[in-house]
Length: 232
Length: 122
Image 1 (cartoon, helix red, strand yellow):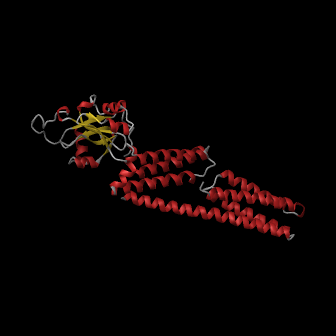
Image 2 (image 1 turned 60 degrees about the vertical axis):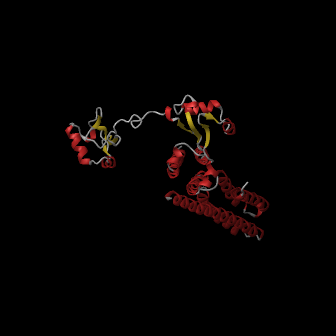
Image 3 (image 1 turned 90 degrees about the vertical axis):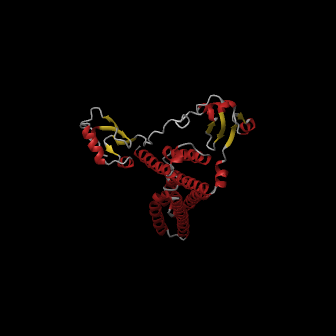
């Protein structure tokens, strides 16, 4: 039993290393080669956990070979777009000027129901509202609506331009200061401590402190916080 | 491009592991086969004490290598080879010469099977 726990632990940690090496691309929408490597890695990892008589190298060598190949392929695709087209295919337009390209849909084996479902996912319920829609290489749909169907902006309404503020970012999470965010908004850790002192709150009691480049901040204090502080 | 460098490192490490495992398996099987050959020759020459000594040496060698081989080969195969090799010393007597050569034949077949499974592609 102890061996099985240790093997699971080793595999778990090494697969995390492998996924981290492959980067964030692997965690979002998957390209065909990424999907293949993810499926293979999950299967290979489970073999060594299930069967203790099989050496760990029987799983780890293929896993890391797949990781290396995935990294090499993504590097090649980044450098040579032709290779990217070969490995991942190219985006295909399915709607142009509100007209559904039925031949392309057939070629993609994309039914009308599939298309409508994908469009609904983009808050489009009428394909006639779409000026241009593409099926991306990862299978997702990108939609560009007709100008008259787009959401109005301040610019469209010719409203005066507001001050370009930084978005609200966390300055403190669970009692831990985030100096990078503070610096980005032109503030310092001392400023945050001072601001908290003015609110009668100590740093360890802060659950979340949100702010931007203005002097205003939003403070969320911990409930029953005394004595339950963790180090950052 | 930092990740490409990691890929190259991973491939180099894997190449090292593959070379080491291939050398380890080939060297172990060939050494054991040669030692078994020697045991057979010693028995044919009637040197049973030397043959028993050679078998003890062979078992000690396999015991040392078994842990390393376990990194690359299924434990079932390794333990069955250990059992076969361990049992050979009981036949290193003048009365059991026929049995010894038969048992050595079996052990050799097991070793060759493991080598074949390790190196065969299909």
